[in-house]
Length: 110
Picture (cartoon, helix red, strand yellow):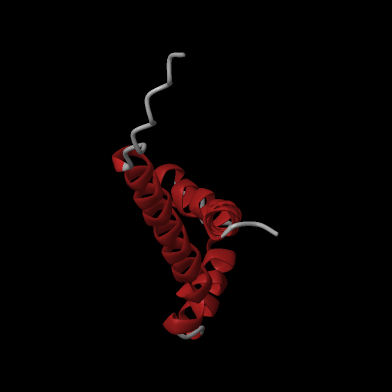
């Protein structure tokens, strides 16, 4: 049976790992979703290429039709989990550094 600090350490580690994974997935999904449209926008502005403007317009209309609360729920939750995990790790680190070992009894000399 694991002790309470060992269980808390395991839970904090799992929370940090899942938070980091959630942040990675959120960042990757945002990057992969918006990257093609960024290139469309950039080519329209810099090069004057208007061939992909209808695709960009459709994407912006769809993005505007989704309620803002739904768009950011996953990212907000993963960022908050990351912050919470970092705070737990920081507090555990501070607690372990401020802990003072109990004095050991002096060895008896025969």
